[in-house]
Amino acid sequence: MRVAVFSTKPHDRRFLEAANVDGRHRLTFLEPRLSAETARLAQGAEAVCAFVNDTIDKGAVRSLADGGTRLIALRSAGFNHVDLSAAEAAGISVARVPAYSPHSVAEYTVALILTLNRKTHRAYNRVREGNFALDGLVGFDLNGKTVGIVGTGLIGEVVAQIMAGFGCRVIAHDPAPNTRCEALGVRYLGIEEILSQSDIVTLHCPLTPATHHMIDDKALGRMKRGAMLINTSRGAVIDTRAVIRGLKDGTIGSLGLDVYEEEADLFFEDLSDRIIPDDVFARLLTFPNVLITGHQAFFTEEALNAIAETTIANITAFEREGCPQHEVRADKVRAGT
Ligand code: NAD
Image 1 (cartoon, rainbow, N blue to C red):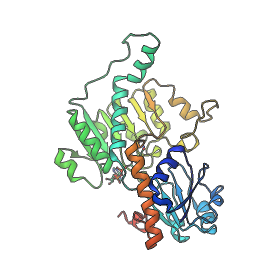
Image 2 (tube, protein in one colour):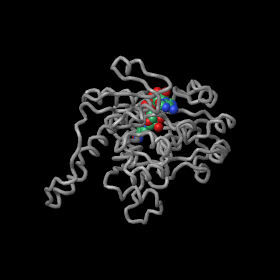
Image 3 (spheres, rainbow, N blue to C red):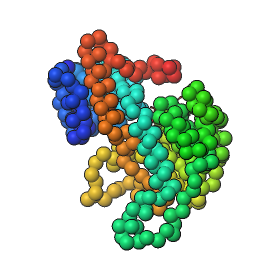
Image 4 (cartoon, rainbow, N blue to C red):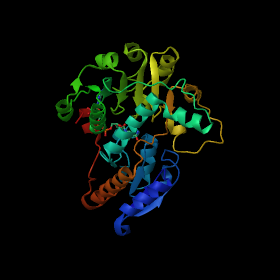
């Protein structure tokens, strides 16, 4: 099949070419993001391959359909950036990579927790400047602390396992409790109790209308004063302006973000010689107790391999059987199945 790959970075090309055994599919690598304005670049391609910050709204879908596209193969688990109803109406199938390496994201989440807690990011810079003072670097033992996991699917489950290994008390909130987590001793509670009891709250739910701005002023008001908040799920699960208020008044003790509400304008690009126009993001960067990375939790060899292989398998299945292996259907998402 002819496939237009949008938002291509060097690693996308490397892993997708390796997975495209015998050059079965004709992959065209395009640097621009997929949007209503760029969709015509896919003219004549039966499939497009898209990533998390592509905007696949009604306009983009219409333009893709006009150009002959019949499959949108996402190289991500999340699909909140796709207008599924518009795709369905246009007769375009949508596929995703439901699981690649939950370990990649879970281990990264723990890296954020450990770094923020023990301040190794600050110590690294100090030592390089010849500053060996310890003032301001005090952390806390994870052993015995309470970790609240919001969303115990594939990633949340691995986070639970790792944090239990540190000797933490792990509590969780999920409308569909995970029996493997329960077997591990994880206690399921309402979101209010998770917020009020946790020393560390870590978010692993998808971005849906129900989870949009789940962490707002009201939720922050329920948190233990000085708790750590970690988000490696999707930026808009957090109301960033509310979180800035929480950092200013000390409600939040530290914040680790790998995702940001307005990340589409920033992440995955080298903007180091430009002025960042986003004042909210700029304010976040001023806090010493905030650690932000640019959506890299998934970025391991194993995950990239798995993403490329599942993406190619989705495209091959669609070519052979008219249906990708991991289809995302608007009606099923609406029904919550
Ligand atoms: P998953 O589908 O296996 O698990 C998500 C869990 O969230 C499910 O158990 C679901 O029941 C639960 N959930 C749904 N609504 C909820 C709510 N209102 N409150 C609490 N829990 C709720 O997904 P996963 O593979 O574990 O991934 C989780 C999220 O992580 C993805 O949706 C994606 O947004 C994000 N992600 C980020 C990166 C990254 O690089 N930062 C990489 C992969 C995935």
